[in-house]
Image 1 (cartoon, one colour):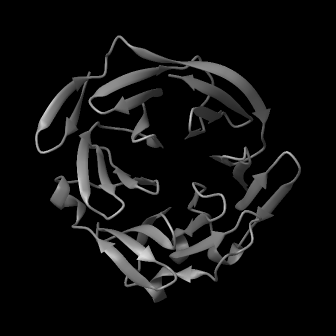
Image 2 (cartoon, helix red, strand yellow):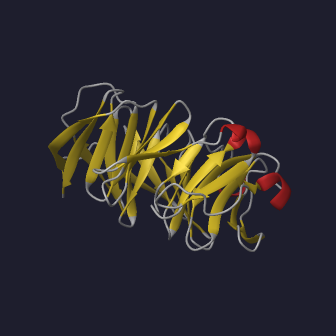
Image 3 (cartoon, helix red, strand yellow):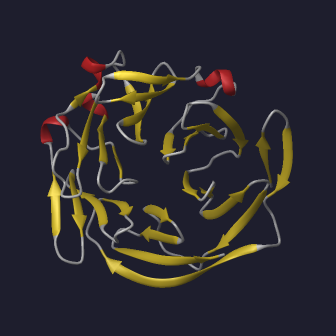
Length: 262
């Protein structure tokens, strides 16, 4: 099995490598949820149950719901003081503070932008949001100034037939995933590179690189090297969240935490 890293040329690398990254089981935590979102830097647990967003700490559990906007499509928790909640059905975004209070009024993307069918929304720095619309372009939108700061080319410009199914971002980079591979852009919307790794289900930014989930296995991609993450886990995988050196896996009943040992 081969995987390819594409800069201005193709560089062949073999993911069937001898070196592995080991993990250590830390704990398991019971959780009644429909969707496990993740754990933030303060060890708060975020999850969705009956279309209500919950934040569970060691002290209490708080929640947020907005039934007028339909089903929650995605929740971005990279900044625990500015959660980004996307409601695709109503083409809207809600921003929440660390107490799940609304930071702004509803951001109606139909009214505030020219995009009637936004596919994905993710967080960025300051007052910005990454938006991927049905015109297959990636935009950086300043929701306070109601202005677009960045507009990329259509995704076909970077790779033929590229049809994203997921977006991930940090303050410095943003990635779009498709069945054909992964496109990476920097904070200014400049194209960085294309990773020709097919059928990746999810990626998790880590340092300047990322971990990707494919065929029930986790791999860490570091520059031109790919390392298999040795994880002794044989239960159902519903959701995965990776932050810093911690892997959290939700099997529908419990969250299993593992530490990555580099």
